[in-house]
Structure formats: C-alpha cells, structure tokens
Amino acid sequence: MIKRTLLIIIPAVFFTSCANYYISVDSLKEQFAGIDSSKLMQVGISGPLMVDVNYKANPIKTIKCTDKSGAPAQLINGPSIETRITYGYKKRRVVFYFDRVILSNGMLYGVESRYMSFITKKIPLDSIKKVEVQDGGKNFHYTSQ
Image 1 (tube, rainbow, N blue to C red):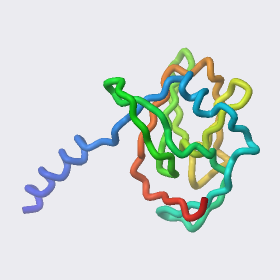
Image 2: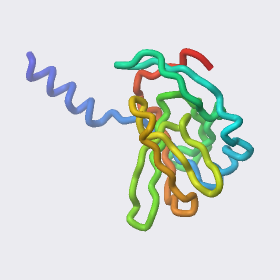
Image 3: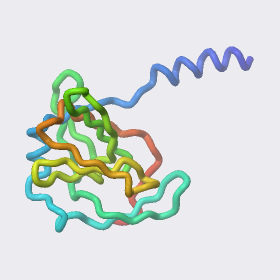
C-alpha cells in the first residue's frame, strides 16, 4: 500500500510546477516608471515560521507579463510572487520577491530572503538577459497594506 502511494505521489511532485511568466526589461521599466523610494508602501506579512513582519514594498498591484507562448498575462502582486533574474555574460541567476524589487538609476535592487531582509543585491538593467515571475506557492499573506 505504501509503495503504491509513493508511486503516485512522487511523479506528481516532479511533474507539478509553478507556471513561469516573463517580463521584458522594457516592460519592467514601464511598470516601475514613476516609482521611487517615496512611493513605497508599508506592508505587513505573515507566513510559515514567522510572525508579522513589516517592510516597505513597491506599490505595483498587477504585474503585466507574458506566458511561455508569448500571450499577454497578468499576475496579482503579493508576497509570494518570486522574480528570477538572469543577468551578465555568465548568465548568473538570482531570485527576488517581486514586491521587494525597485528600479533606480539604471539598477534593479531586490531582496532575496523574507527571513533575512538585509540580503539584497543590485543588478545593472543593461546586463539583464531574462526576467521570469511566478507564484512561488509559499504561504505568505499580507496582513496590512
């Protein structure tokens, strides 16, 4: 019985994935146009292994993107939306939470961890090769906005 259950569960885990969406660098610039540090909003979140955490998030409500076939799509911004940036000639990758991303002076700034918000990185916009977004499925929820 246990072997049969595992034979059903394990393939389901491997073949189930979050849908990836894509944003061009130009679209990213458009969506962040007019947003600077003075426009960030104070939010609170709760999630697994954490009590309420407060931070400043970008005010974007809806993320304009495309699906894998290039069709327009939209994602509702929230604390579980992850952004994977591929950049540089070595095609390095970094994952940020979308609500913690901001563009300023030709740079993309992002926070990599919910638990250690001091882990930040900046990437020159002109070095970005690909921007992917997805709902990471993590159990984070806004408690205040």
